[in-house]
Amino acid sequence: MLRSIRWNLLGWQAVILVAVVVGFGATLFLRVRYATLERVDADLLGAAQVVVAKLQQTGSAEQLEMPEAYRHRFGTAPEDAPYLVVWDADGRVQIASDAAPADLEPGPELLATEGPRPFHQRSRGPFREVIVRGPSDSQVLVGRQIGRERNELSRLLWWLLGTGLGIVGLGLTWAWFLSGRILTPIEQMTGIAERISASNLSERIDESRIKSELGRLAQVLNRMFGRLRTSFERQARFTADASHELRTPISVVLAQSELALAKQRSPEEYQEALGACYRAAKRMESLVDGLLTLARIDAGQLEIRHEPVDLRRVVEYSVALLKPLADQKQIELKCDLQMVRVTGDAERLGQVVANTVSNALTYNREGGQVRLLLTTEDHDAVLTVSDTGIGIAESDLPRVFERFYRVDRARTGNSGSIGLGLAICREIVLSHGGIIDVASVLGEGTTFTVRLPLPPPGLK
Image 1 (cartoon, rainbow, N blue to C red):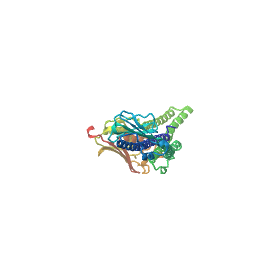
Image 2: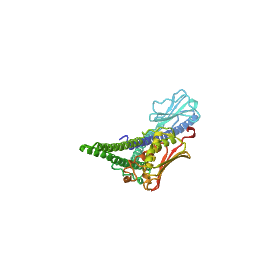
Image 3: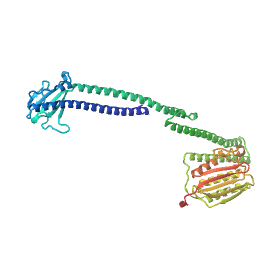
Image 4: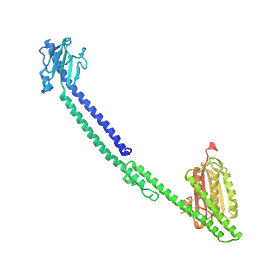
């Protein structure tokens, strides 16, 4: 509980409020106390100076009395009565009022006679006294009880304490309410995040109800939820497609095995069954290899070397591997390749070339043509693979790089394609900092374009 944001906010609010209230209250109390004692000291000093003036006139302290005007000024209550004491230069009492305490002593021997404070003031319990220098180094003391002022200061102190507690209470109440208003959107977002699961990814935070800086957080979370939903849907589709693709070769292996084991067969029939099982196993191997490659890509574990690569030699090697397939379909391979060097992984780049050329041969017409052009443009190496094949419909072009997507399953069902080659090509090209694109005209042909960044001039 104490670790919650709300309690942390209240704790800091309480610390700040108490510090402000205590600071303000203490400053106010000390200022009022100082002003009160200054006023008392001023009255006592005025009375003492009148007594000194009379002492100078008469030269004797026997007939001295407290000035009448100051008696009324100090108050008429018995406890407000001032008292007067005069000591000679030797410290002997010359005159003392009846109200004067019995334990009075003179002030310091060296009293100031001028300056900002030509007197000595002191507090003794409930008494406040002022001592000034009189004629012939005598000392004149005027004092009185300050119980009334002390009671007023005590009442002020209690009033400040009560007011301070009230302010702190109101401040914490308001902070509790305000923190609740602030944290409500966070609690709503937390509740929505908790309700989201693999089976419920459609829920979103209502951004229109959040007008503060948390609105930005709501937008980020909604986009994250959207990406999460897309990822789950993609994963589910990926799993379903992989299961579907695996089911076919497994079914072939099982069917051929059952037929072969059902009764005695001729060597030719056994050979035919083993051939079908072999082809199904190769298809499964290709599918598993593709799935493992994509899994490593998704996990960021696909190893890509970054070393100088002669891209023309990579293209020539891939074309040489596919030349028998081109001859079998009577497809002409035309290459116009410049000397281009890039930084990357020769094996992975060869995989990209082989996949794109293989597609161009597979979906080409007999007697057609595949043209490869390698050149440079601006700061990129550009490889184009064009064919004169059946082409791709415009509606299918945006999805040709999706996993397990095939333009026409009925048409490509016997081609051996599993719909992962172009998806892998795109990931490899992206990992090299490049892009791959496709353009096609239905019935006329397709062109794949791969762009890879050239190394800086000093690294060629």
